[in-house]
Image (cartoon, rainbow, N blue to C red; front, side):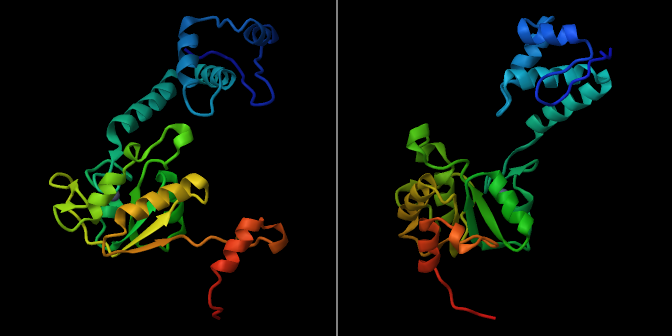
Length: 243
Ligand SMILES: [Zn+2]
């Protein structure tokens, strides 16, 4: 069944029948419990309020059943078929992700990122040839996120060369790798710095080069527009001029 409802994006919901639009906006009592249920579910997505959820629900109603089913099938298939990589917590349909499985990637170099989007951003640049470790967040006491909520212990396991290092039992889990350098590619925020410091304390006893992303004036940014902390950091981290 296809329902002829036209939905506009901004600033409000517009339907072809003004009376229906008025009804939906003022009464907020939806004409069907099925629509209500769909709106309830859609509004659980991040950044989607009930008004946007209603717009999306009505948009779906204007589609053919087959297209709606394709959308639902794709979401279910993704939810059931995609899982974290056993080694680095990147997303994959296999046991290990394509990056960990690639023989061309340098396993000596592990880049630690907050989440998958950061991994994708670095991959899009196309110059990093090492592997990753996705923490799944950063330490944030204000949000109730502690080290045990993140994939930190698996990272320590990856870095350990023997079965017991720093009191961590690694008798189970993936085979340890022999990384020689770890890069902290975490946000330049207090939480990001806290997480980097925690990781540093955890792995400082390992024979490992620990590095962090350079911070400073952004490419294309005028000095006068940089904030004081960024400018100071840029001065501290100045590099030899090469051409
Ligand atoms: Zn992986």
